[in-house]
Image (cartoon, rainbow, N blue to C red; front, side, top):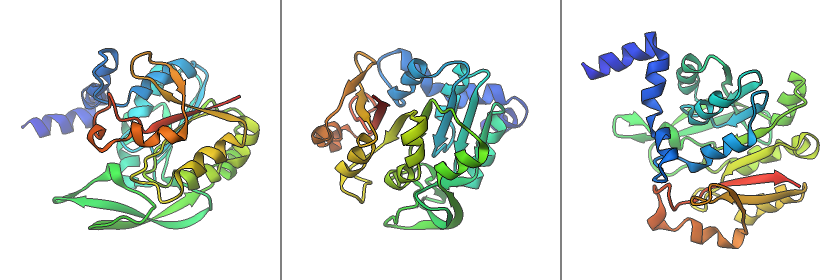
Length: 254
C-alpha cells in the first residue's frame, strides 16, 4: 500500500514526492549529516541567475539544492543512465538533463552498473571497469568543451562531477572551460575508485590556475587542501559517515 501511495505521489504530486525523497537534506542544518555537507556550499557560490552543470546527476540531490537557489539561470544535468534521466526529468521541471556521459572523447562507450540482489546499484555506475557482476549498457559520451561551444554557453558558475572513478577523463574534456570560463568545480575523488595516480587530477586542474579546498564540517567553509592528506580524509572506518569521510573537493580559480 505504501509503495502504491509513493508511486501515485511521483506521478501526480511530484513536489510532495521530492520533499519525501530528499528528506535527508533536512540534516544539513543539524550538524549531524546524513547527506553530503558540500551541498551547503551551493548556497555560497550560486545565485538566482547562476548556471550550474551537474555531471553524474544520478537521482538529483544536487539538482534539488540548486533548484532552491537558481530561479532565472540554468540548471543542466548529464546522466548516462536513461532510467535515471527519466526519473529526474519528471521531478525537476526547471532543469534540463541530458542522457550523456561527460568524458575526454566523444563517442560510444559502456556504462557498468553493479548488480545488487535482484536490482541494480545505480549510484555506483561507472565508465570504468568494475569487478563483480555488472549490467553493461551502451551509452553516448561527449566532451563538455564541445557541448558548451555548440550550445553557445559563455557563463558557468559551478560544475559538479561525481562519476565513480571517471572524473579525470571528465575533467580532460573541460580544458577550454578551465582556461576561459573558469567556473568553480566540485569533484568527487576517491582513492578506492581512482585508477590513475591520485595527484594527477589535482595537478592537472591546479595548472590552470586553480586552488583546491575541502568543505570543513565544523566551520562550513572551504579550507585549503593538500593531496598528501587524502588517506587521512578517507580512512576505511570513515566510509559512509558524512561527518568524517571527505571525498568532494572544491577547485576555485585564483
